[in-house]
Length: 412
Image 1 (cartoon, rainbow, N blue to C red):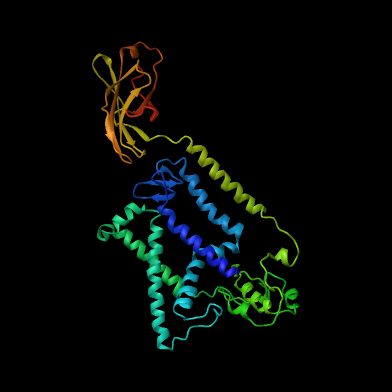
Image 2: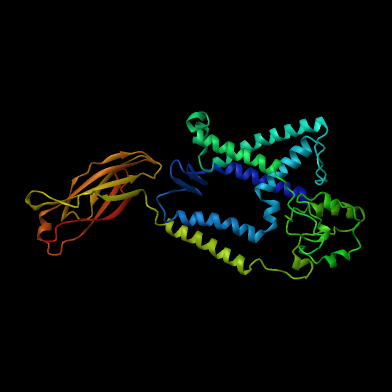
């Protein structure tokens, strides 16, 4: 199988995988989803609330560092075999323009389209229209990483109520049309002075096997002359290697262009992937995963935030001291529960006001909690300044969260 066919297979596999990820769930939780609507981050079937900042930074750092790590470790392999922009250009140029509409030849990417012909003008309009439809699919699929599919297809039926989402999709689609169709994709050039060539050009020019068919030059998507040496614009698509292999194969000879690094081909040296820079990336990615996993072990069953009211404390009859609190409870479970509260130390304090309540999955609410002292509190010489409370679900008391809250009282 030629490198071109292998590359198309990789493109198809990656595209299918990326398109399907938003629809894959584990226990009704998505594999990868950053929901701004519900303020949740789904990762490999686990849900993290945006409020759970002890896990979120490490996961986002992993994704951010991972992009640079892939570029550094895989280099041109990423550019030629995985980069979305490369895949988009292949879809538009090789599939739509060349294969479907026969506007250009895949084996000669240097030849410009003759727009003096009316038929070519019509084909160009058709090509742009087809690509615009595809970009709408691409941008909609991109939105599925931020809006779950079950919500997206409901929102899309009411575009007037979700105008921001529609504008966002259209903006991405129009940008992709401009980027792929109208931007000049001639990223490289032939370096006549040979200064910017990565390979030693003198060693290459001594090769007498080349038939000067120039197929390797015509087929290059970045418009470089590989005969001048490996240049910085090369994306390792290896289409030039396929072209050379076809010609040299007819002469019963091997391709003059092979997949290898400068050190391997010219200097005959094997370079390890564990360079200082790559090792730094490996260590950073490992730490992100390790710390995210470590802190995820402390993931609470639901979220509880306790705030004091503006009144520090109040003194009731019989010198009973009272403190008021506002509890924000967020049910991060996928089931509805009835929540209640109890004191870990019920000897010196008691609950004056708090009623159990029902809370649906993924919803949150605010409740008032009033605590007051008991007779035993007055007898204490060293009065405690903190109280331990436990919020639990009546359906399953193992689902609980403990909090320590400050209790204020007059010191005299």
